[in-house]
Image 1 (cartoon, rainbow over the protein chains, first blue to last red):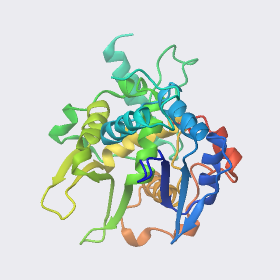
Image 2 (cartoon, rainbow over the protein chains, first blue to last red):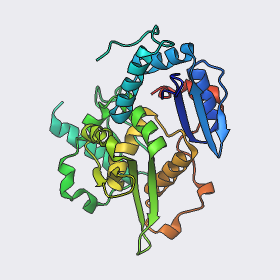
Image 3 (cartoon, rainbow over the protein chains, first blue to last red):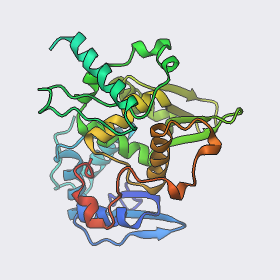
Length: 96
Length: 210
């Protein structure tokens, strides 16, 4: 998602599952705290280095690609990041 | 190896699995060259295989060639947006089905899954306040295709609710339980797979990143 202040943000949210969400922190190599409210866990990153890790994960890892609506949303997110002053110098996949 | 021989071997394994004490029998590549089969979970009633839609399904040998990354993606999707329904019928029997439920605007994801697996049926509910589409996979296809694929690839659900639903379904299938009242307490259902106990162990799972 793109916040109103133009910060690019990657968030994962689902019913509370502490170990799983702590594992996300290990995968994305970040110390960002997991927000736990109303029985839901939320992983959220916004910094340039963390956003680059997210792009690396989804675009450069060779894993099964995103499909359907999530893929479209991801591509729109990348396009917005490319235009942003804060994130425009990150390493992106070739635009399609 | 000819297709007919593949079919014979496939049938033999299936029959052997049914006759044995519900244990799985895996044919490893070392035993049969490049042949690998998917053992049916429990017993499939002969009438369940008579229905016409079975002609669409791939043979079991072809299912083995589906990449494990796809299976990992599918299991993650079911963890998030799916469920395994185990309910009582009006006559006291058991219905088992796996459902993936998405917003209608994401129907292409269900069509993609259906195009790969060739099982299940896509239902559209466009008149709901939040228009929805569902891919519903019946018990027979779970027994013959999806659950054997999970076991073959050693890929499993990572959320507790979905794992409980999977364990319960597997228990019912393996023990050929027919009546809903015969289902034991969920606490007495054995785990098919063991969920990691700490965050680091999650990252060690070969399918976690998918």
